[in-house]
Each structure stands twice: as structure tokens, then as C-alpha cells.
Length: 135
Figure (cartoon, rainbow, N blue to C red):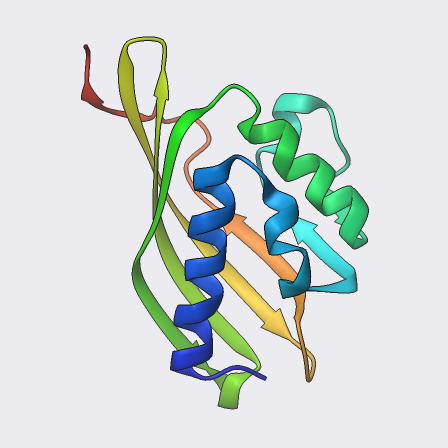
């Protein structure tokens, strides 16, 4: 279970991990048997359902390997279901070449009495990222 303060701390850890380009810094946030769901898997020909902490971290690392100067910001967040579920809307900004880009997406976290048991990402996979600056 999670409360608003813990969710804020969790998102700060994700922010530091992405800024460092090292998602393993967020390892402690996940249950060993975490389930990760994201439409991004289609871009890398991965299964729709990723199971286990090692595969989850491996996939997330794959998705950010070409991103530079990442800034992960939780812009909205809410805890539901007495701490069993949390919602976070994220601005994920990064540099690609000379352009600064943003992806705006939603994450649903599910908890079963401890760390993240399931992480579900939602965004429009057909929409290009927002261009913040063209350099």
C-alpha cells in the first residue's frame, strides 16, 4: 500500500534514476515479480506482458538508451483504493540530437502490500512527441 507522501518519494526516485540514465536506481521500488505493461513494447517486438524485475528494468533501459538529458516530472498524482492503486501523469522530457522533446503519459501503479506489483503505462502511441525546442 502507498500514501500520497510515499508516492511523491517514489516518483522522485524515478526522476533521479531517469536523469542518471540508470533505471536500476529504481530497483527497490519494484516487487521481484512485478508485471510491466506498456504500448511501447510493440516498438521493440517485446511481449505485451513483461514479468519480473530483471526483465522490467531491462525493457525500461532499452526504451531510454537513446535519450539524453532526461527529465521525468510527475505533474499529477493521486492515490486510490486505500493505497492499493496510484495514478501519475508524467512529463518525460529528453534531448534527441538538437531537439528537446516531451512525452506526456499516464502510469497506473498497483500495490499488493509492498513495492510496485504492476506498472501500466498509457499514452497515444500514434502521436509524435511534443517538440519543446528545435535547437
